[in-house]
Image (tube, rainbow, N blue to C red; front, side, top):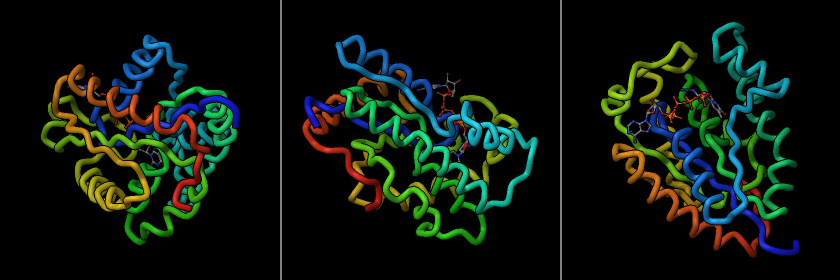
Length: 212
Ligand code: Z5A
C-alpha cells in the first residue's frame, strides 16, 4: 500500500436512531475539512441482490429466513472489492448499517444463534470504527411511528437491541456507543471526533478482516 488509506466507519443502531442523518452530516463535515469521504448503505438496494432484499423488506415477496440472511451477506460481499479499492485510494467510507445489523436482525428470529449468523460475513473488510447510536424504544417512538416494512415492530426491535448488546461485548471490534437521544448537532460533534481519530489511526495500517 502506498500513501494513506481511508477508514471504514460504520453507523449502527436501532430503528430511527438517526443513522442516515448522521452519515450524511459526517460525510459533509469530512469533505469540508478536506478529507475524501463517501457514504454507502446496506442493504444496497441498487444491485440485483439488493433489489430482491428490497422486495422482501417491503413484504412484496417472502424468502426463507436462512436464504435472506445469506442474501444480506452476499450484498455486502458483492461490494467488498469496491470498499477495499476506495479505502486503498484514500477515501474514507461512512456506511449506514453493516454485518452487525445482519447478525442482530437474523439472530433475533427463533432458532438462529449468533455464531451461525456471523459466519457468512467472516473476512469482510473490517471496520476501523463502529458507532452504535443508542436510543430507548420510548425515545424512538417520539420520532414517529414505524413504517410498513418487515421488522418494524416493537417486540422484534427489542430483541434486535439485545443481540446488538451481545455483539458489542466483542473487544476485537472498535465499538463506540453514542447516546442518540441528544440533538442532531451534539451527536454530530461526537461522531466527528471519533471519526477523525479513527481516520488518523487507520491511515498507515492495512485493511483487516472482520471476525478473523
Ligand atoms: N437489515 C437486516 O435485516 N440485515 C442486514 O444485514 C441489514 C439490514 C444490513 C433496512 O432498513 C432494514 O434491513 C432494517 C434492518 C434490516 N430493518 N429495520 N428496522 P433501512 O436501512 O432501509 O432503514 P433503517 O435503517 O431502518 O432506517 P431507520 O433506522 O428507520 O432510520 P435511521 O437511519 O436510524 O434514522 P434517520 O432516518 O436518520 O432519522 C429518523 C427520524 O428521526 C427522521 O425524521 C429524523 O429527522 C429524526 N431524527 C434523527 N436524528 C434525530 C435527533 N438527534 N433528534 C431528533 N430527531 C432526530
